[in-house]
Image (cartoon, rainbow, N blue to C red; front, side, top):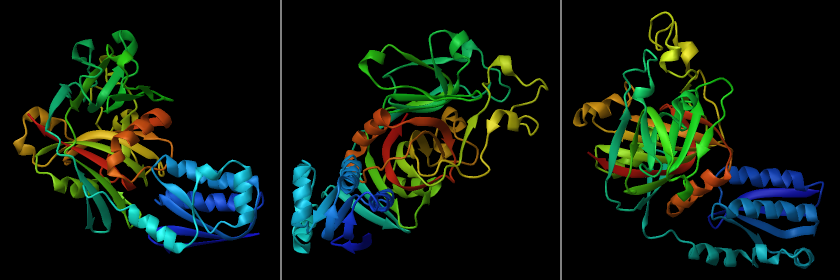
Length: 405
């Protein structure tokens, strides 16, 4: 029997345990710790003062939580460890995996050392906490790729394809594919996103599987093939780590709050966040001339729309990691016409995102680039979507790049 009590202590969640940590009780403890981590906790104080026995099953639960939090710069702190438990930890070779504290005063002293970097400003706005890291990066440039004109009639041909060499653009989104021969890659065009040099494509075919190419020197000669889209370069003007006290914040509101810190009219946005339900859409057919609607109408006509577009009637993919890139335009009239055309009707932003398996994220904006690399190299990707403004997130980070030209 193991009693588990969760409380707040010194700014950390304290998990007080009483009884035996064994094979019978460890599954429930593992579930409780996972819930806390998924809920955004990054430091857990586990009070073992009333634990009478711990088996390898109990040790495993603590170690799994420690490894999970270690990926996001968090940790499990062990408080008031009894001699019998300490002996088992020592015999198992696990002493070096944890930090130990004798009492609450030691925990408080440890918390005082972990104060937020003076470079990070904390802002509270309408139930959302934003930790803003000013990076001061120089503005980047925006490039429009291909044309939207053939889309409505599904009339794209090989002449419309725009090649983008890997490394030429750091971020981007659009309808694209990979390959050398048009007769091959024309069969796998789909919603695509380029994040920090990593390319993801979700072919507009039945039973699609995401294809991707990670940013490597070996891929420098590769070309990505765009029918339409955009790309941008530049350094981060700032990084905003956000968390909603209400459990979620929709994308439209998030963009408004995060981008309030910069002044440029055109912004490049890089998103890494935990989903609470996505409203996303993607194409179901490839809009090349071979697939032009037989009725002579447009793919957006009521008679054709359902066959061509996967459009949500309810949110999906909750509790997943979302990594995306896009642009935000504050005032359409200040931008050139080709930029205005890549914005959806009635929206000031255009964002594509890859959807990954569930995993906790760091909440430290200083680790943003490292978290992007970890998502790209360690997590399983299963979808690429055009994100709608109703998509909701609980916490995450936004990298913001000012764009010119």
